[in-house]
Length: 427
View (cartoon, one colour):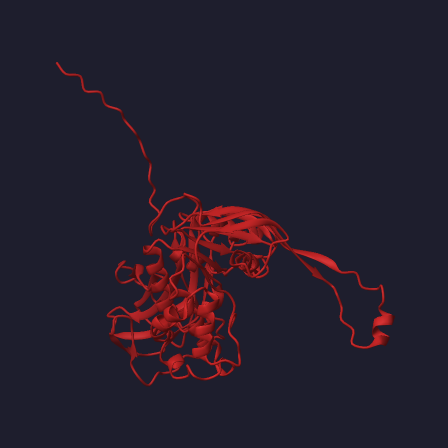
């Protein structure tokens, strides 16, 4: 069977540096002084996308991923090379693309449906489904001109149209980041539904977690060049390593996000604080967490950690008085909030006394047993009985792990394999 999308030697050039001058005087003065130069947004891109697969286009801003998506959609024509697609394409590219600002939401649904090849009867049949998917906010303004819509309403209506025309190929740019969390979950559920139905999806992003969550593989672009085409874990690692190799490490998500809190004298809280699980602890801000640092041997070479590498977590705190037998806690959660690991010094049968002033508590992990993913770290300080709570920081520090092997799952097992061939000889 032929691929759903075939991309062969595709390059795209834009001409830059053409200045516009409003007056005749300016045109005469600058005559012959400006030299337009070519900018190649894509350079000889070539790969196939099989029917029923979900492929992510991954790269930093300006890498060419959105240009490539527009070429696949037919909005832009390649300067050279060709793109072949099989089946009806629905594209949600940029905010408000395809919407006429002076038309109402209802009229834009009808117009977009016609442009996408639906008949008026089909549009009428699907109209209520489209509006219902877009949500109550859009439904209440469906007969209002869309130029008065918020950015979130644009995205809601655009995505609702794109996914309800029964396309064979769905092209989605990063505009979904504009929607709220509930709508994003709704969109991801629809994407999963499309995947189950065998639809082909091309998803543009610079977010590694989205690639891991929905893609079968990812294509990494950098300044118009194709750097990698592989399974999500390997593609993400290639993306991050390439950023470091080209001196743009700041464009990759940081390994940790320090709290940047100035050490201040702890103060008493007035109300009990609710801890994870719904339990309440008596607040007593005798000890306050001021900063969290993460460190590993290759931090200055790459932003992410590899499975099996050591990690040093330093929790900085400030105590207003001496406190005996303090219970320090740590939890590691994945992006969906599932606890990958949780523990504290009480469970480890360790006694920790805190003296007045600044201090640092170390969590030393000899080997991080996690596979590819983004993880949130939570820190807590309580007394040994866990009835008195001093401080708690929830999901303030992120940890990025990039796997080095083509394996799946959540944990990195130290696996060795052996094959023995046994020959049984009968009597």
